[in-house]
Amino acid sequence: PVTETVFFSGFTNTGCGQASAQTGPFYCPADKLVYFDLDFLTQLQSQFGAEGDLAAQYIVAHEYGHHIQDALGINAYMHQQQQQDSRNANVYSIALELQADCLAGVWANSASDRNLFDSPDEVNEAVRAAEAVGDDRIQQATQGRVEPESWTHGSSEQRAKWFKVGFDTGDPNRCDTFTDP
Image (cartoon, rainbow, N blue to C red):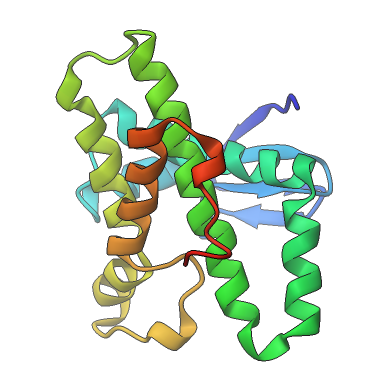
């Protein structure tokens, strides 16, 4: 499944409504496009310390992971599970996000195999970025406290773990975060 990336700064209109700089990068299933807020990259580097080109590429690969999930019907499955088990709706949402992290790791494995990395240690930039965008790290930096019940993407540890599963195995079939959260 092919999609395109729309780069924006400030705000943009999407098939999912208007997006602002506060939205950050995201995938819109309505128009099947990946949106990448260029200001988010600056924030990722300055506020969360996730520097390097692979850090930014991890974020884009994560959003492309959502496109793959949409094309394979995983998004629809997740929404169905949320409706059947509304008490655990957030658990399913986090599983979807962690799976996108794992799929980003699978992409990074492929890029590494094709000798596209500057050095073998470059993958650590992506791992640090995954940790930097964990809900716990973001909440601590922005609110001064951590509230796990309000998480939407998973902890720093979970995000890094699932990226590494994808990178270490190179196998998207190992990215089953729904049965192995």
